Image (tube, rainbow, N blue to C red):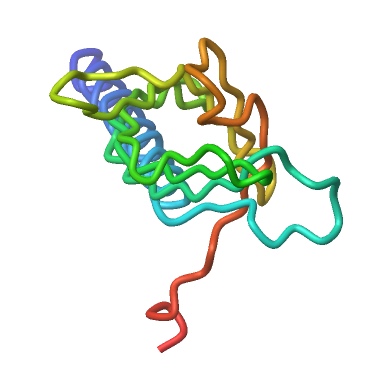
Amino acid sequence: MLIKATIEEVRAVIAAVNDLRRFIRERGERRADALTGLWTNEGDVIGPIPTHYVDLELLVERSKVSGIVRSNTTRGRTSLPNGSLLGQRRWGKITAEVVDVRRGRLVKFGDITLRLKGEQLLWSAKNIQGDFLPKSAALWKLEDDDEDD
């Protein structure tokens, strides 16, 4: 009788652990889906004029993050037409670097930290090369037309 009760308790613990693992996995997938897409700060009529207009195409798969960064200064002198973003998602934030190939050499334009806060993706950059990227920006997600169909 004691062995049968112990076996039932072990099965209940295993089921609870499996449920918890499934919950964590599904929550991670929902967060990855929320981050994947096109983000921008162009067209902001409420806040101050940004130093750069940024378009960011993100693809988040589990902890791996990749994307394309397009950045133009609002003064129109400096432009990064297609920088590659490569990074990791961990503990609610994305840490990445923006790189590109120029004249056959890999050039690093900066280190980026992205954090989702409400409806906005907060951009913070350091180790910026030249004036290609903003130090900070608040981006919002552009809605896909396909989702409305």
